[in-house]
Structure formats: C-alpha cells, structure tokens
Length: 320
Image (cartoon, rainbow, N blue to C red; front, side, top):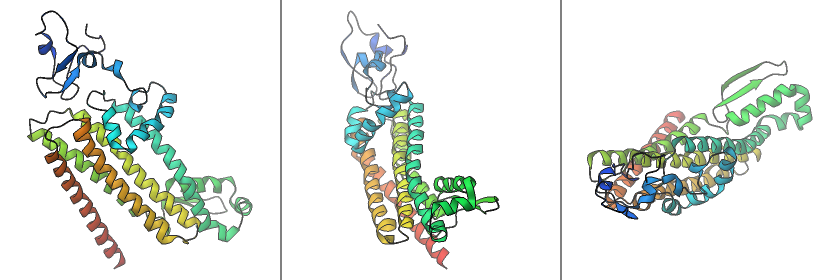
C-alpha cells in the first residue's frame, strides 16, 4: 500500500512518476524495482515511504533544535571526507531545503562567534593595549558603551567598525585597519561563491542540453548549499588568523596571514573538487560521469584563474 505521506511514487533520482510501472504488476509487489526513465535501481519501500529510511545522524532529518546541535558533529564528520558523505546521502535521500538553510545559519553564527574572539583580541592589541595598558583603564574612559562597540567591531570585521569617543559619541563606517581589509573579505566570499556556483551551473547546463543525464535539480541544489561550507570556512579562517596576527602585533605576519591561510585555502579548493566529483560518481551515479567531471573541473579552474588575475590587477591599481 502506498504511504499517505507520498501519494505519487516517483524516482528519487530523476523524479519520474512510477505509477505506470506499478500498473504493470499483476498479483504481488516486487521488493526491488528500476526506473524506466533513468535506470536507477531501488527498493520499492524507499519510493513508497522515503521517511522510513531516514539517516539517524544526518542534519536534514532533524525535528528539533536539540537534534540540530547533536547531529552537527557526525554530519561534519561525513562531510569532511566527501566520498563517505555521498555513499550515505545519495539520490534516495529526501532533500529538505529549509533544514540545510537553518543548519548553515546555525554554523555561521557559531563559527563567526568563535573567530570574533580572536578578532577582538587583535583589535585590543592594535588599538587599545598600547594606549591604556589594561582593560580597567579602558573601561574607566569609555564605560560599558565602549565595551559594547568593541564587541561590535569584533563581529563586524573586516567590513565595518565603530569609532567612539570618551564623550559617548560614535560613528559606524568602513573598517580602516592595517590588519583588516574589507575588500579582501569581499574577494574571499565572492571568489569561493563564484567557484562553487561554476560547478552548479555546469551541471545544470549539462542536464538542460544532455537529456540522457537524468537528475532532479534538487540534488544539485543540495550540493551547492552544502559546498557553501567551504566559503564559510575560508572566510572565518582568514578572520581568525588575521586576528591572531594583530594580537601578536605582526610577529607572525608571513606565517599567520599568508602561509597558513594559503595552505588552508588549497585544502578547501581540493575539498570542493572532491565534493562535486564524489557527488557525480558516488551520490548521483551519473554514467558516464567523467566527461561532466572534466568539464566541471576546467570551468572551476577558469573561475579561480579569473579571481587570481583580478586580484593581481586590483593590487597593482591600488599600489599605483
């Protein structure tokens, strides 16, 4: 009997209506089936009642905020190795857009709060420690308002900062610091976003013009949303190490601002490639998958090259 939760049995990969296939049954329901449109093999139980086969550790299946917290670690653990993730979360796993969006917002708040601690430490060393020496003297000069606006500066870096005086007045403007560069933050966010979007666009175009590639757009959207974790990691890493460098007053300038973030960026770049390639070959089981893989990699490399060249040109124009 078809579950009341899903009145129309569809293929979890391509979305093809399976009622025509069901109509061919004469006496009994088979255990296994195959989609006549895309060729995906599946258990009929997964088609009739997909909620029954939910992953107990996965973030998309949460029902409460507490579950979101407790399932974050195992979800990140599987995502850390994309091949593990796509073996578990495949085309049979129901896509829940808002569950992923809420989780990404939750992670953004948590990681931003953690990196803001290091940014605040760097702001204190750069702007106030040399002038006041201790927090008590700073507090006696600016009071609770000054503390509040320094907390704001920790969260708003590298884009905005509050400038205030002992009289109690304040203004909010673009951050002006030798450690924090607003445009660099924009390049990190925009560059990685464009790089990830390149993969999504390539897949959507392939699905549009190559009819033999049978895949629901929702699967591509899931991959795009989850790969935004790379953007978040790159941005918060840059903030954290910039704050550390300011805290040590430039002592580790090459190591902390250039060296380690560069290594992390390379690892993030590799992870993004691995994530999308594993999605094509393991999670979505697209055959043949290598032509799409090569096309996606080439397009993403072009996106990285454009970002690199534009950064060099911008630095040259700024210096001149």
